[in-house]
Amino acid sequence: MTDDGKTREDENLERFAVNIPPFPRAAQQVMGMLRDPRVQIPRVAEVVSLDQGFATKVLRMANSAYFGLPRKVSNVTEALVLLGWANVRIVLISASVGPILCRGLKSYGMEEGVLWEHSVGSAFAAQMLAKDLEASAYSMAFTSGLLHDVGKVAVDMQLRGDLRKKFIEVMDTCGEAVAEREVVGHTHADIGGYLCDRWNLPPEIAEAIRFHNQPRSSESALAGVVSAANVLANALLREGRGVGIGDFRDAPDGTFVPGEKLLAKVVEELPSIVASSRELLGGTTEVVPAHAGRDEK
Ligand SMILES: [Fe+2]
Image 1 (cartoon, rainbow, N blue to C red):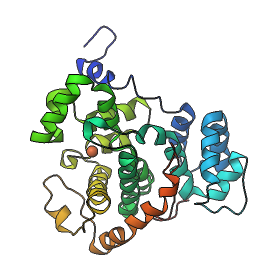
Image 2 (cartoon, rainbow, N blue to C red):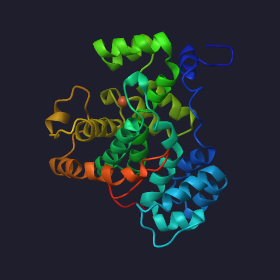
Image 3 (cartoon, helix red, strand yellow):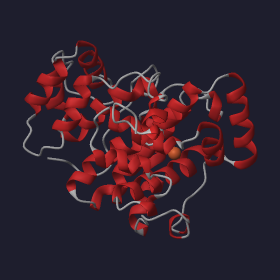
């Protein structure tokens, strides 16, 4: 423990937060508010409107052709009311983290936009898989899926020159997890969980992200869902292969096994959901549809 009460572990992790842009304060506040079932859209809109830049992004996304709102909107309350609850959370979180997740990650061999697409795919898959979880876990599934690999951004921003070369060498021979432990000292999952804590996101989201690669080590149902969503996004979007129950039942780290009907639905719908949102994935922040999962509120 250091003089200011931080552990050595905290200090080490802090190194990874310095380059990451802060989560917009309005978005932090809104994420907290969205957990309260009594919160009303006008109150959320009021908080969003306090941050001009954030409000502009939210309006731009709301007005995108993707949502097909009946008219152009120029005030946040009207935009959020027309979008409806199911889309509000998706717009707000995507507008907050789009610029962070769109980057290319040289250390991981990922071109610009690759992590974003994987994150969006995982987010929609997580939301679909979480439909039978309790309401509060369901409400955090999209955000957890979207942010599950944010720690990779922090790792990539930290690695330069010879260290990056070494990381890539170890990753090529021994895999990502070994490279992260040996060269970085932390897994991207640990760093992602730490960032979520720093951004004051709900602890359940930080937990799901921290354990998304080893959900058996956590009590969190959400961690299992994000782990399964990650498998689905990788197989369906990156590898272009089918997915069966065996991908989950036999997975050494898996805890969440979707029912066959639900799995078939995700397999059938996920690629088109992500493809149809692709026009909104360009630029820095534009994501967003909402036809996955169940209606909220
Ligand atoms: Fe990951």
